[in-house]
Length: 128
Image (tube, rainbow, N blue to C red; front, side, top):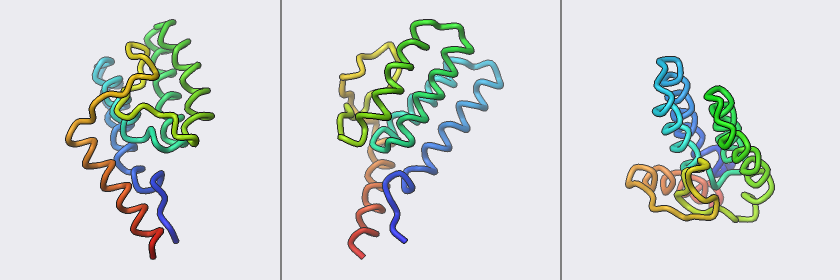
């Protein structure tokens, strides 16, 4: 069975979603959104994870009553579901409305290593 990038990066993205949920429960809303941004960065090369990150950000915006975030995430959700597969993704972009959806951003060392590990795992399986 081959392992896709979506499968290979899944554990890292799920960890960030879980950390976001825990932070939200503690009332640490800013920290929760930071974890959603991390999930977005890690999963943005996967249509599944990219779209799910924007859906979680949309829900976060709704709960925080941030109209601009909700509207921005609706647009980003549509783009994530339709453009990710075409490779139209600015690497490192955090995904929130405080940043242009077209702006590439530098990856942290941790994110770069996690993404490289997932890419290597998906390439390794494809060659076998």
